[in-house]
Length: 167
Image (cartoon, rainbow, N blue to C red; front, side, top):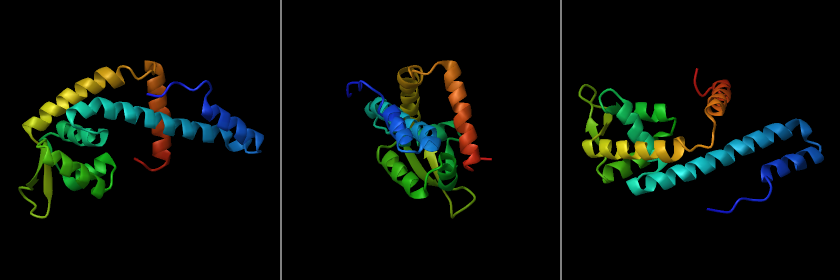
């Protein structure tokens, strides 16, 4: 891990934005840049926690989605929709999960055109262990006070709704 910088480079960039005549955009630029940097920090932490489980965060999300489904399986198209990823990205994750024996593609019982993605027992074990580690080492140590986490979620939800991410 890198040592902390002596000053916040995003705050410095905001000051530069203001000094160059873009004051009206400076706060939004700083907020967006801070969100992107924060996402990067959390993703790096999550991937480091998940690596011993043979997972990335993207692959963990696939397992978690299947783990939350009623039958432990979903059509690939529905999984892609719920994870909000392109089908090609999902296929890449599923290929890797299938190669390690955590999921399998099976025929849909009533629709011959559809393949189901199914979590197998080994996948469930890995999911549970990975979820426990994420809860303990990332989510419980998020450096966010509970009230701040709730407020941040609400702010980001309003943005996502306004951006047509969901209804």
